[in-house]
Length: 351
Image (cartoon, rainbow, N blue to C red; front, side):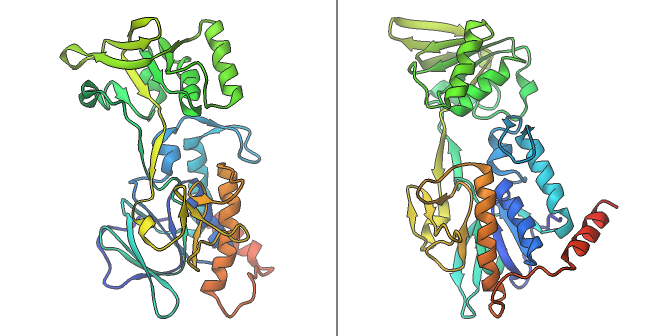
């Protein structure tokens, strides 16, 4: 697997399938492409592989990957990178696909914001929620503290070791991180505007047990101001039903959720509903023939936003994409010699 230089080539890079997104679903798609004999190129506007898993919750435990009882998001990405190594799909990180257009030969021409161009028989969009930004704490004094005392993700759990941490939010991420941080921080307080939560029932039950055991605290209220003399956070003011309260804090982790933005994808002529690309569930093809979507960005009735669902979607999408790359073949053929060839590639990649 290579990460090419940013210098644009003189002509478009030719590939069977262009994969947009280097998160878990995009990485697995590159593996599936290789398995059925498709070449692939991966593009992502983030500067490293892993997508939202790495950007938002790299150390969060994941429990629903088949045959892996538990792993962190970081470990999952590492394993997927290792899995695709035999096929060596080129990675183009820090590139955002801006435009796509249909060519006379039926292929797609995609161009990035840094001048790269790709000619692909098919495009698979595995961009998670598209371009995403966290909903921020709307306080003027929070801005200069961002990255030092006010955070919207947890790059490293150990950064909060021995600190007083306030986690703000009521969704899965907020509760999961509050529970995880209680094991390393000096003290953790979960703050939410109401006593009800949008998180999974199991997470809520675990949080309430931790509060009862005095492993962490929970407060109903809204953060109204931060006290940070000389740029060092000292306390947080909460507005509560009975008045104001002040909580000591070294860090505030704000997890109000993400604002999804499809960015340029919304201008490609693809049908989009509710911020998701509408797909046919028989092959996860969009309303533009030859452009597919898998993972959180794909929308259809009874959609389950699970990583393993994205793996399934990508697998079926690529089998239809095969028909665009090799239109003279009726179906995907994996010859009896395939297993031997893959075994040789895997052995060579570990040599």
